[in-house]
Image 1 (cartoon, rainbow, N blue to C red):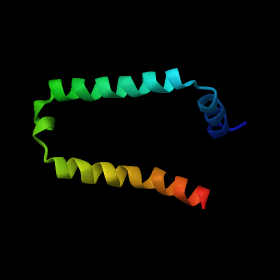
Image 2 (cartoon, one colour; image 1 turned 180 degrees about the horizontal axis):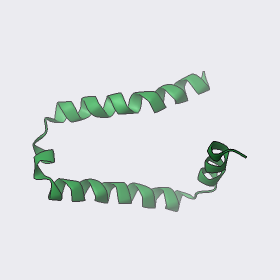
Image 3 (spheres, rainbow, N blue to C red; image 1 turned 90 degrees about the horizontal axis):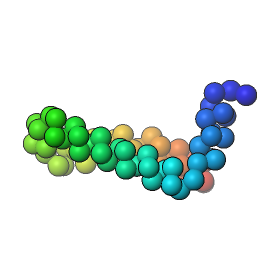
Length: 68
């Protein structure tokens, strides 16, 4: 069993509570970074949106290509 298939099976066993906990930790990390590095809040929101879309393009493309 490869590492990828092992991680896949572990992720499939996660409950919605586990996934929500991970998401809340990500939100808390974002808030902590904004507090510790105030220059992050000065970024242009359109730039942040563009970076988000570029970073989200690969996983979204995999989902779309897998389902079609």
